Length: 340
Image 1 (tube, one colour):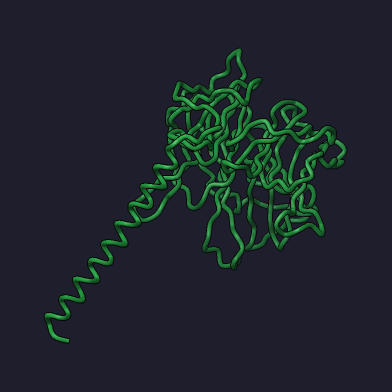
Image 2 (image 1 turned 45 degrees about the horizontal axis):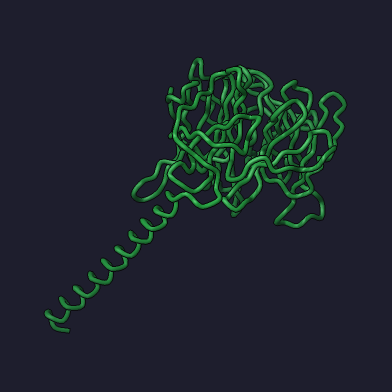
């Protein structure tokens, strides 16, 4: 091939690559444009001021999933009117939780090559107090009842023991001292009354009892366990097997969690159960679909959880005592929390 022909081939290749790049940019811009356009029939959303401070009017705070300029932003509605107009905050979160005026927002930071993630601690006016880099994709977040302690879980890769399965990292942060426990894996484990150590230990789904004690999921050896942890002593002990993503009731007497049903389809293995901590008696909830979420208590006797919907996610509620039936409370929403 002559030098001139090589130049022509190179020039043609450059033109093709430029065309592909242009097409990719236009496709991404078109997707972004669709994302920013409200869809007919969707919930009305407008910008406004959002506060996590307690007031006389109880609010529901959530990640707005409705298509439009406010998608993925924290939004609020009156708790008594979850299908009403939404007020969007301008703060985008993938996962969110709040209590006593403290918020934890797990965010994506979009980069030119790849996205990164961070945990942002917010005050009651959604102002950033501090942020911390995350080593993986956010999946769970919780705040202690006092607002002092926050926890989050991310999916991570690269653990040699994990193979093709996922691994997690769960962190606990003290927002008064800013002491960060980046992983719970060094905590001393007591399993079935005996000390236990293994390389494949994973934790996720923290729910706080107070500023020291919490419940969570421990996975090891192909099994999952409900554990009660002590953050001050850096210890956890197992309570029972086959429990994931526990959520503690406001009065601290019950947990609702997802449990893997024997013989169920691998694509829909979960069932919600309530556990009375005094008697350790389990009660299946009236939601018979597979729920892959960490529920939120919307009151003393009901829980709210996410299910797949037309906009990506809808919120449903069911009584926590096994009675009643599931009811959809909100479309196009995720990561709910209650203020007031």
